[in-house]
Length: 388
Ligand SMILES: *Cc1c(COP(=O)(O)O)cnc(C)c1O
Image 1 (cartoon, rainbow, N blue to C red):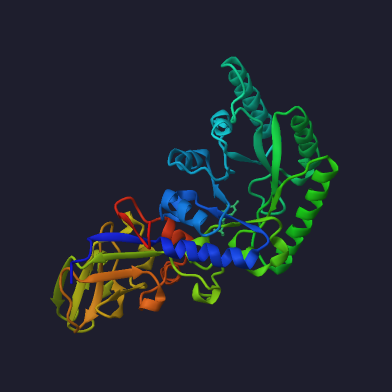
Image 2: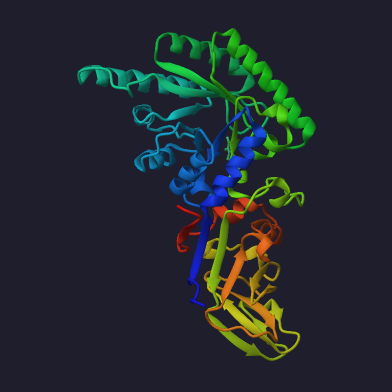
């Protein structure tokens, strides 16, 4: 057997395609936006974007404009929506590059409109309209109860009236109206849904005709059909990780985990009973045992909080992490079994292979699967399987 790589996150693009296709079939006739923010939740934005589009997504979603520009730089031409902007966000560049802008305040609307005017003026100055000289495509976001981003409900009427005026002037086109759920419980989600319906009615009364109304991310898209509207924004489901934290597995949802995090054993030692392991000796061997060293640590995104709690797949079985997870490495107890330097260690992957899931690591670290995959660090190369 060839020695496995020192450290590696294997990203299965077939699983991305299959997950998007399965979810798209479930939510149809609503369309799918694959959310590829944060480097596609740590999986690699560009390869995942292509695979998600192959799987049937028709939109891509990112948080900020740098993430959107990365997709355009790589030749991705599909509609891209970016919804989180600083006070100096380069809206003019976004308009020129055909990026849809999620808008969360009247001030942002004003700045986008000014940017659109600027882009139109320079296009006219350079001898004629180009395909990307505007209007700016915007999606107005209403805060329906997450209290995070979005136009506050008390400013919504003013915002839609202002947007309708800018649309009439040809500065913007309100292509979407959207909001985001708190995923608190069914009752709270339904209250947000009702608030969204009301906001849509007010937008329509102001004369806006958005092509896409969107509210649901993975959790509601799967379990609350009334939240699907025209488009659902699927992040975590794309990566084959369940959003619920209630024991529901990827397989229960018909999804396949996309990322497998693995390494090879870097050292093996036999220790006597009573020996302390790793910093502060928070774990001691109860009997003579064999320890394997894994070259991944918290610098690579392995949560220190999972010390002596998580498990890995090594030599055909799940084995406990023992002692503190350090910056670059941690130790696994393999008992009296045979292991050798160079053996493959799988931290998480598809449980069908016997490996823990990203969710198992999340449980061990008192967090969520989202945080496990998004924090995998730069030192871990991503390699692509399943036909990149
Ligand atoms: C991250 C994000 C999503 C995707 O959420 P998942 O739970 O990963 O599906 C959707 N919409 C917005 C606004 C987001 O920020």
